[in-house]
Length: 173
Ligand SMILES: CC(C)(COP(=O)(O)OP(=O)(O)OC[C@H]1O[C@@H](n2cnc3c(N)ncnc32)[C@H](O)[C@@H]1OP(=O)(O)O)[C@@H](O)C(=O)NCCC(=O)NCCS
Image (tube, rainbow, N blue to C red; front, side, top):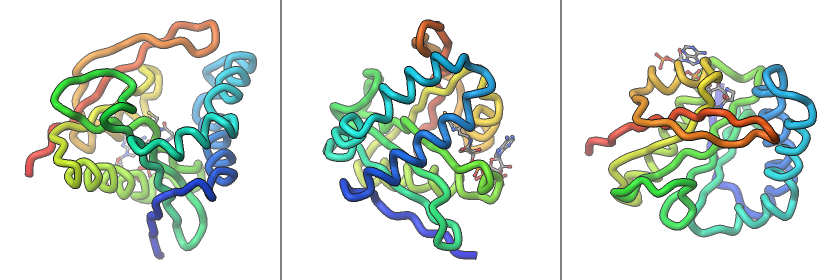
């Protein structure tokens, strides 16, 4: 088995769009209305929006390959791109998604390690992320990897107000 991680560039736009839509849909479609899903997918993952995010110097995207097959991706934010001001110069994991058939093979762990590598490279002491309170699988994964809940905030999924838990990990190095 081989695992490779590659930093994305603007040339990866189409693949990024495909995997973003597929993984978001697989993760959330059973617990959200088709209308809210459609609105979110169109707004978050349209070509213009993703192109803007790919060329933002305060974000980085990575693809992960399992035996040469694209199996997931990571998006991290820092500095001006943070979704929420959190003090003390943190790194945010905005998206971490492994395609369904590749889950539970250790790939999420590889992507978390990549996020930590970026954080350390930038001398960040804290990593934080927001995770939907109903996404129990992801919450268990983050807890297992040393994240603790440090807050919560609400956001709108279409017309539905939902709660995200804020989870944080302090890096010691
Ligand atoms: C959450 C996610 C990224 C985890 O990635 P993964 O590749 O399946 O997880 P890994 O195989 O790397 O597991 C890493 C560790 O977490 C644990 N873990 C993973 N999923 C778990 C689950 N559902 N319940 C309990 N523990 C879990 C594993 O046992 C493993 O433990 P170990 O370090 O002791 O071996 C992946 O399941 C995913 O993409 N889910 C859908 C998208 C999503 O919800 N993303 C997060 C949005 S906030």
